[in-house]
Image 1 (cartoon, one colour):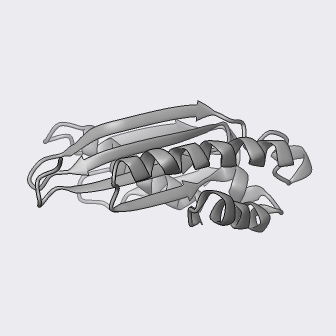
Image 2 (image 1 turned 120 degrees about the vertical axis):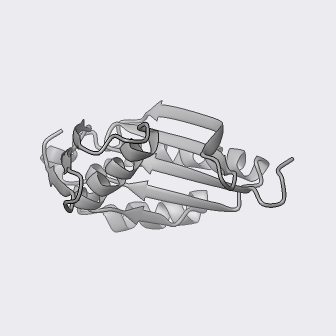
Amino acid sequence: MTEPSTRRFAGIDIGTLTCRLLIADLIPGQSLKELRSDRRILRLGEGVDQTKRLSSAAMDRTITCLQEWQSVINDHHVEATAVVATSAVRDATNRQEFLKRVRREAGFELEVISGDEEARRTLLGIRSGLPTGVTDILALDIGGGSTEFILDRSGQKPIVRSIDIG
């Protein structure tokens, strides 16, 4: 069981090719303690560049996975869950259909984030894993549907850009 001050969170990242789950405890004064992680190659964005639509088969695969993960999250007594989607859902003309299905069939509220927000969150993740004293960061995140460029220099506002090439 967790200490009273420990909080348990889950995060799900729905990408163009891969979906990721992380369940972790946030212990005050410490970093996150990973309890469970999973990664599935589901190819949600299969064909989106050509058709501008998420296919029924790809949505079905992803929702089945999310239903399984909802059960895992419930078993871990998670306090709050964040679920985000990136390029494929951002670009799909039928994204509202997918969002409704995810809510109805898997019980998640899905946030579709912009490319620049995706880059900003990537930077936060990079920073959290670096040793103290590292001040300058140049990063490139090549995903299945987009690529994020990140330049973070000490004393300056970070520069983040996302392009629709993955």
